[in-house]
Amino acid sequence: MTTRSKISNSSNGTAARKPGVRELAAQATRDSLLRAAIKVFSKSGFDGGSIEQISKAAKSYDRMIYYYFGSKAGLFLAVIEEIYSRFNQAEATLTLDMQQPGQSLEIIVKFIIRYYREHPEFVTLLNEENLHRGKHLAKSKNKGAHSSPAIGILDRVLASGVQQGLFRADISARDLYLMIAAMGYFYQSNRFTLASFLGESLDTPDALAHWESFAIESVLRTTAVAAAALPGTSAATPIKRAAPTRRS
Image 1 (tube, rainbow, N blue to C red):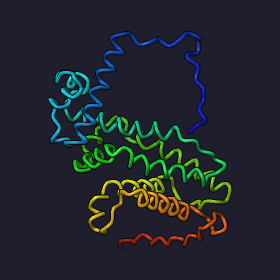
Image 2: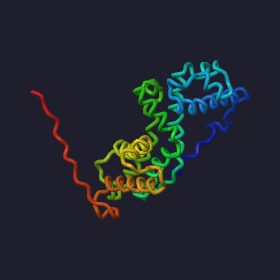
Image 3: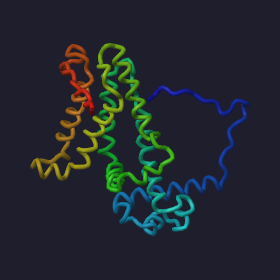
Image 4: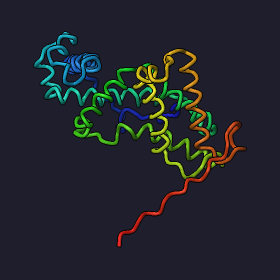
């Protein structure tokens, strides 16, 4: 998002204390270990990646990993939190015009699909965490914080579209995010096996452009309130939800 509030350094006018040399060195060491861990874990997985490999790649020492992260599991959790943070930071730079919700949705869909494509380690590491049934992320002290920025942006776009009479009011930002993420994540994660299954490459520029266009059109069709709202879309058929069964 481009609109950002400006925050003063402090209420009493004094500048915030700058970190000292030791603090900067400590942060540099921690960041180096995280970068190395991302590379090692994305290549070898949690079980295959070792403390020794990571410390060597970071040109550091094993004990520093235990000092900053407590354990190998603690380091892996920090890695997952870091890649989510990078995603959110990248999404926060998007230029979105809330008066143009359809265009904003298109920008978001493109961003998510392209981010997965351009950061394969993001998908690989999330696959790894899912293989472990999310046990590391379950211990995070910031549960929910990783998804709230992305869903918050979508929520504002949807609200603008509903207010202008362009979008349906019965779609939640959470459901729409799952739809967009699924189309981007599944394609990137399974493109090699799907290529064999379908008998065609999914990595060519034409194939990638086609899927991106299909995803954008699918999202716009799903959110459109009527055919006249957005060119090329058709009114969505209302979803009939089954009434909950009652047990006697």
